[in-house]
Amino acid sequence: MVFLVEGEGGEQSVTFLDAPEACAKYDARVASWEELRDTFVEGLDICRLAWLNDATVAHPIHIAREYCPDVGVVHGGSLEFSEKHDVWCTPINSNKLECETFKQFTCDNGLCVPRWALCNGINNCGDNSDEDHCRPTFLLPGAQGQYNLTFRAAEAECNKFDARVAQWEDLLHAWDQGLDICRLGWLQDGTVGFPIHSPRAQCKGGESAKGIQHFGSQMHDSKYDVYCIFRNGDSDCNTINQFTCRNELCVPFWLKCDGVDNCGDNS
Image 1 (cartoon, one colour):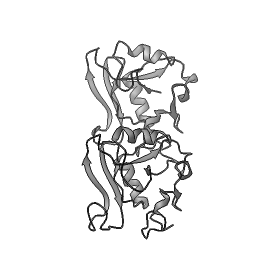
Image 2 (cartoon, helix red, strand yellow):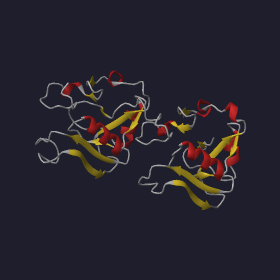
Image 3 (tube, helix red, strand yellow):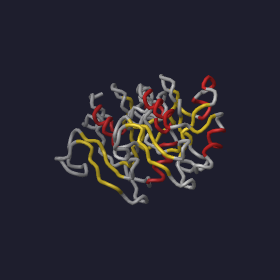
Image 4 (cartoon, one colour):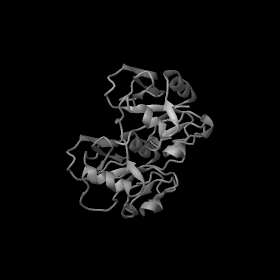
């Protein structure tokens, strides 16, 4: 089995010459293309080019998306040894591999995926266990009144509750479940938007607006709310002191009894 390792400098910080040491920390070695292919067959899907033992880079993709449009074990070819990427590792003793050793999530099928890949709307494990029990997208800070979060502050606000800034796809999923909140919030790509089922005049876009209202990229020092999604499936609306809808969506308490079905189930 193959797993992804980042360098001490974070994402994409390992040269090819440093790759063996990065794997050795976990009693592992740099994986071969064949080993990555076998793990791909088991279901692994991670959109992150990383070193293999022949000084090439590749990533395993089952679900095509914007930054990874090709399906399969996508090969990036040979690169200069000084270029920086992550690295694919495989344990020297497979009987001792535990994903928790390197702070990764253990899929039900035994594969390991980074925790940043949890609840991202993509079946990274291959058995969807990284998406099971994920909580829906919610708005922070959830207070009525003036917007006050820059993009950097928005990330910190989500982190307070072991959550990450939601992607557009996360917000779309919450909208599909019924979420309706007329508040602009940051999304992970630096854009802002909000989910609307019941168009009303006071929402930006006017009475004709319905769906995910998306307003494109913003200056990072602009101020809005933020849409977040829990990393931990055990967290719930009580964690963020918000109302729990019957469908398990979370909405700020000030939206109760406002004449709008913010939950989508009228609870």
